[in-house]
Image (tube, rainbow, N blue to C red; front, top):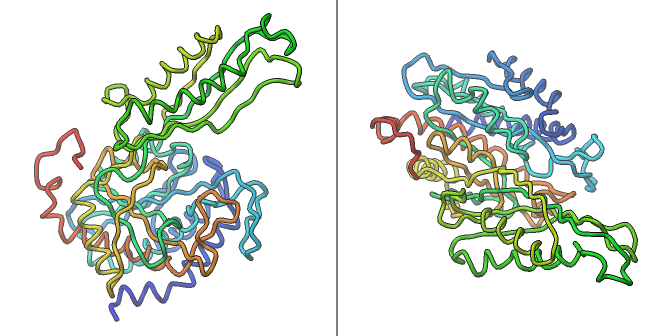
Length: 409
């Protein structure tokens, strides 16, 4: 058996124990203090020097001692504000907080990959930067970038892995181009004039304006933007009123706009700008006025073609025996997009869904779990991906040609 594969197999129990530890002790974004302590202790025991960055983030570097490019490997750390309802032995011990997206697995895989890569440093010609990032669920990546995570030394490429229950265990999805959506989050307050439901003509009803708005906003994705360009506008929260016979003064709406293309104000589609136009005009039609608050949370995640090709070649080695390498796109968002917008990157979906073991529930479900048998494959993808990156560095155009301000995909 290949020595790297053999070593990872020997560490299977350790990978699982790490994942279950993180699962039992979840922490919300920028509150991952115990999580960071665990990561630092593990890495320091291997001989790494670690630094804290962006409050709870942890960074460590492996310098091969030979010249070459810098590859960043990233895992996210934060959990979600969800009460876990499963009965597994490693169920969350923190009330109202749960690793319901797989970040516990990501940390475990990258930690053990850091161990195996350090043990096999002779394969490397350059530097690996291990980054454990806080607050992925609310765009923590951009804060790490602002704090200099891509500098000192300057990062040349980046790789990330996400366990993914919509993809069956034993499969892996690696797709060039757009793979995850951009995300804008909105909060709208519609102001009317309160009154008695028995005399509605004396009031200005924000409830009917809100109802009309929810319906009318859907024309953006069905009538204004091509159905070949994925756009989803969802309302997730509606608040208004105090009693059944009172017309309220205001109604509040919250939701999200997701898109699988560059969706900023300079784009052809301009989904958020179209949305603002409709909100204002619908409110005016109903004699209301509105306050609109938009948070630009994530940009689309776009995989670089050469990094994608390298990752697919790596998967062919890791998943020997004809395992299917598939394409996968989702309108869900991920702030790894901030890294891959700055340097060539690839984001990989590691299949973790298994209906036989009940681990095929949606991410963010209160009983979310993964097929843990895939964890060693994730470690090997990190390890062999790094090996292949350094082996083929002289064939990667973004390393051998003059740099550009734009990351091509």
